[in-house]
Amino acid sequence: MAEILVLDDVLDAAVLIEKILAKKGHKVHTFTEEEEALAFAGSAAVELAVLDIKLQKMSGVQVLARLKEIHPEMHAIMLTGFPTVETAREAISLGADEYCVKPIDRQELEDKVERALKGKNRKGALNI
Image 1: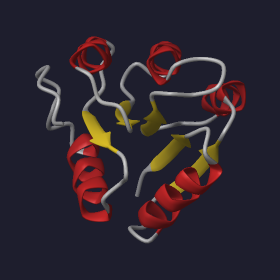
Image 2: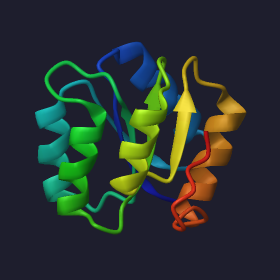
Image 3: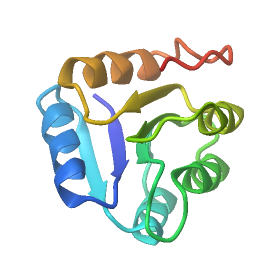
């Protein structure tokens, strides 16, 4: 299965995502600090990043941009409790595959992770 990086400034949210994806057989690495997540990505083969848009020091979109510099082929799912068209457009422009609105629905997350890992949305259409 996939190596997945999860970054959310709320530990409970990151742990919930980890539990959902680990049950599907993925190896999940959770972080609440942007720099720790980026450092990990620099030393590991990350296939998918699940990133909250609102973080403490950077935005999830800024983290996505840096992760894409490290792993250009990495897939990404953005999470937000406050969806906006502007954020969705920016995430698309940086290569996000999917966009999930909090609170996280288990089935929706599982489906979007599966689609992202299969590369189904590389044409520029972001599923919200």
